Amino acid sequence: MRRLPQVPAALEFDVVILGGGIAGLTCAVGLLDAGLRLAVVERDELLGGRARSWADPTTGDPVHVGPHIVTDCYSNFLSLLKRLDTGDRVVWEPESLLYTMFDGARAIELRRSSLPPPVQLLASLRADPALGLLDLASNAAAAGVALGLDERGVLELDGLDGGAALTTLGVTPAMQRRYWQFAAMSILNTPLGRCSAGSLLRAFHHAITRDAVRVGFPGVGLGDLFAPAARAAVEAAGHPVWTGTTATQLLGTDTRASGVRLADGRIVRARHVVSTLPPGDLAALLPESWQARAGLDSLRWFSPVPYISVYLWFDRRITSRQFWARAYAPDDLNCDFYDYANIYPGWAGRPSLVGSNIIDADRVARWSDAAIVERTRRELEENLPAARAAILRHAAVHRIPLAVQAPRPGFEARRPSVRSAVAGLLLAGDWTRTGLPSSMESAAASGWRAAEAVWADEGRPRTLVQPLPPRGRLARVVMAAARVAPWPPRLRRAMAQDG
Image (cartoon, rainbow, N blue to C red; front, side, top):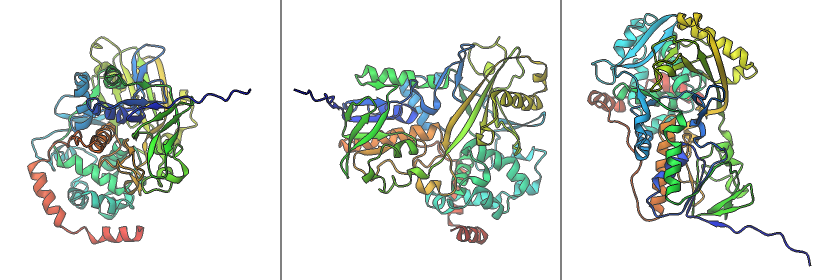
C-alpha cells in the first residue's frame, strides 16, 4: 500500500511578523506584554534588515551595512532603544554642530544658533561664501509653502518633481545646488530632479519648524544598537525568532489573511500577519485575489534606490571630525563621510577608519571595487589634505541593492497605511504611510503603529507611536499664517500642467 507524503502540522500563533529589521523587531517589542503568541520570520541569517552590521572579516572591526546617523528627532527609534536599554550606545556630536560641508578643502559648518525655528539656520547659511543674499532670499516662497504644509498639501505636490517645484518657486540655481541637492541626496537618497516635491518640502518642513537637530552615531555596529537585545527580549518571552527562514506565500481567503507558508513547507497560522517586507518582496507573496486590492495594487510600482558604502582603514588618524559631507557636484561619487576612530568609544589611539556613502549607485554599478576605492580616496583627499600622506591598509566595498524606495513623483500617494484591504494583514516598513521620509525613524514608527493595530484589534487599544519633538513657538505662529495663505499661482499652474 502506497504511503501518502506527510504534511507538516500547521504552527499556531496569534501574530506572525515577516521581517527582522527595525520595523519588524519594533512591532514584536511592542507586543511583548500583550499575552499573544508571536513569531518573527527573517530571510537573512543576520537580524537588522537594512540597518544590520557585522565584524569585518579581515580586521574584526564592527562595520555597518552602510553608515547611518541618529538624530534627537528620532522619537520612535530612540523609544525602541529605551525599551531595549541600549540608548547609551549612541554617540552624540558636540551639541552646537549639525554637520560640516566641504567645498574642496574649505570646511563650512552648519551650527545651531540662538535664533528660533524657522530661522535657526540662517546665520550658518549666510556664512557660506557660495551663497549670496539673493540666493538666501530666493528660498522665501518655498519656505512659505513648506511651513504651511500638511499631509493634504504633500499629496497635492506629489506629482511634481522637486527641482521643477523649486525652480517654479524662484529658488536660484546656486541655492538648489548648494542646499537642496544635498538635502535631496542625503535625506531622500534621490536626486532633486527625480524626487517628489511633496516628499522634499515635507522634509524641509520638519527641518525648519523644530530646533536644529543633534546628530548621533552608533557607538557599536549599527545592528548591535537594537537587534541582539530585541531578539533576546522576544525569545526570553517565549517567542521564536527564525532567521535564515524564507516566506514563500501568504495564506488566507479572498478577504482575510490567516498565515504564511515557509520555504521548508511549514505553515504558520496566525490571526494577525504583519509584513515589514519591501513592496516588491511582499507583492511576490500575495495570492492573486489580493493583488488588485487598494493599497496592494501599487506594490510593483515602487523602485529601490541602490547605494554603495566604502570603508577605508588608514595607518594614521587623518581628521578629528566625526562626520562631514561634500558639497554637491553631479560627477561626485560620495555624499557623506564618517571617521569611526572619532566615534567608537575606546578608539582614542586607533588610526582612522573612514566610511562613506555613494547614493543612487546605479551610475557606478559596473565599476570595480578597486575603481570605487581609488575614486573615494581621491575625493577624501580633496577635502582632507592630511589623507594624502596616509597609507591605506585595508578597504571594503558594500554594494546594497536597496537603501530606500525611491520617493519619485507619485510616491506619497502610493504609500499604504498600516491596515491593508485584506483583514488581518498589516503593513509596516519605512516606505509605508508614516508622514516621514524613509529612515530608521520611519521604520520604527511603522513598527509601533502595526503593534498598535494588533492591540486595537484585540480590544485593548494602546498608544505606542511617539510624536516628533514639539515645534518652536515662532514656527507655530508662522505655520498658522502660512496655512491660510494661498500658494503662488505659478506653483498651481505647474501642478496643473503636471497633472
